[in-house]
View 1 (cartoon, rainbow, N blue to C red):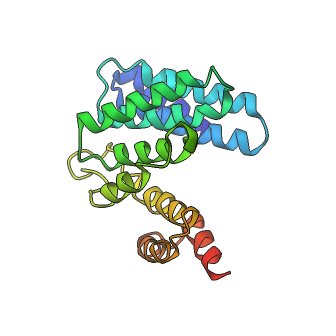
View 2: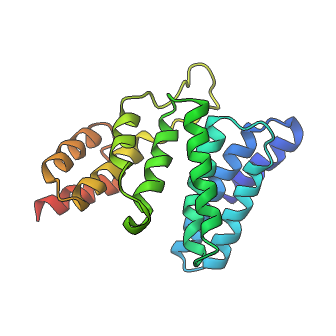
Length: 202
């Protein structure tokens, strides 16, 4: 990931193409996750902050930029206590709306909006929109990859994973089973889908 981040940085400096900032931020998001798994919360926060700064530097943001910014800001909420958490939460919410507004056929826009809603505590209005957002996302194509090879194609697997988490949490086990089976057909190596399948078998 560090090598990829360096490559994206140098590619952006050479070309000025903001798509490299997108992928740099995406890589830094996953690097942040790794640091967090290793117990280094400070490095995780710094890496994520740099990823956000890279994306924020894009002057003319599109739906994909906004969707990724929503995901990064949502993830960053864990690093802040109240009331400071209000700022990244508000930014995540704003970018989720913009991502859908800029392209209402963007699967990732609905996924990040669902994720934000899912992880928002119920007392603050969370958990009301996630299901509809995820079902909408699963009706859409992952990307327009044939038109632009640099376009992101992630999101569909994550939709199946989050939707089955949601149904298990709501004890809608029949729906969870249906979408686990659907998801595993396309993503048989998904750890989360296999984990959720094992939960239903208990």
